[in-house]
Length: 192
Image (cartoon, rainbow, N blue to C red; front, top):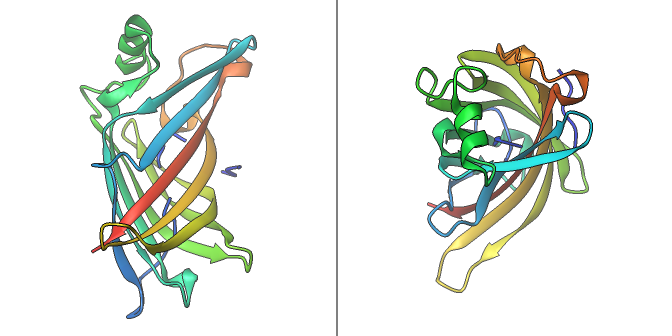
């Protein structure tokens, strides 16, 4: 399935395959909230509904000399979804949509990364959501890397993707305008 420029969502420091000996390992900075998994979906053709997942974690390996030898792994707590509306959030968490009691976690594991010379690239991996695993692609942009003011070293990436709810077993009839979820993912990692 083709993904374009969330919720994931989540799911980026997005790079792929087996890390080389020169890859550096990073922990996604969720403590400092320098990462986010945001989503949007069209509301019946009238407007955009936006939200995010508050609780997630992940790691990535990044090889600046050979970015194709990089990888990412993410885990999202699906019950941490918020759209800033309690009743709607309760419905999205229900078995009509995410069924968070049955499927409390969404995961992403990269399988490959194809870099471009301009710091962008396409990350491919397996997204598991609602108990279904599908291959997705994520458009990735490297934001930057370097030493931080606290003596650490950081790297940051943005990623965008899209997928159809029905491909993950969610078939609630919202009409054709509301079939596709768009994820915007920001990952800043601290080198271990």
